[in-house]
Image 1 (cartoon, rainbow, N blue to C red):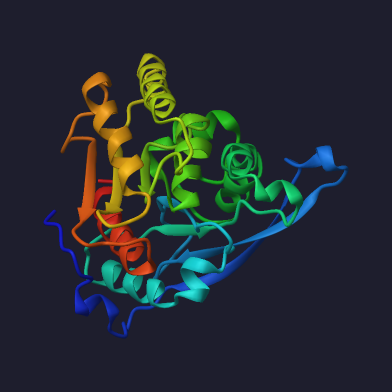
Image 2: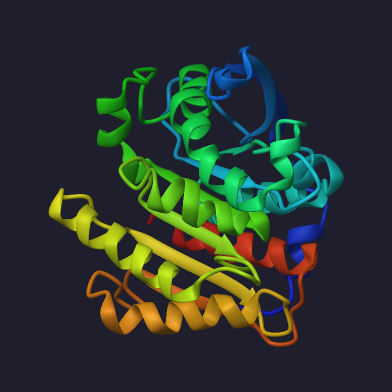
Length: 281
């Protein structure tokens, strides 16, 4: 794959083969400590030509802080146009993309460390089973934990900004057995995080995963070099690579940097454009 630093114009033109964006409602018991089950929703991109006769890979895609599941597909519908064109032109394989939210509308949501870590319960117990029992994925409707682990090669997780932190914390550190592909777009631990601790967690996750026969397929980090999250993100990964033998640059790891790129949707859509050319290969 050759990296580009501007979205190709062809990706933003109206496409004749359009996927659909559907609402998926589900219940989560993750937050029962508050005394009740919670009803939540996600948006799901379903590719053009979707059929239950075929199995699809799934990308779980998160927004950033202060917004919700509407971000990728509803607030920025050109994301859908990009996906349509990528799949129509064979730039990436048709896949299902689920855009949830980690927010619950409660006071605890103000604590970024809490929500980025705690979302891993909902992700594992509620969201993935809801998506993969509804749509035709490699899980084939069997959303038992054993089968979700067995099909991890067909599952990716990516997110921007606070969703990038959640990619590390909820998907990578805490659900590594369910995902083989990761796309943190803009940041790892935030401006006040312990960077050395993140390096340790990355190495521990990969070493334990390898010992269990769960290889990393790809960790595709992304950031603009003028992004507010760039410094901490690049420092952490630069420290991690030499001490993590499981991270092999250009084989299962890369750090895509946009020269002049900032903390905005233009950059994040470009990250997604590149990540989908890496995932599931």
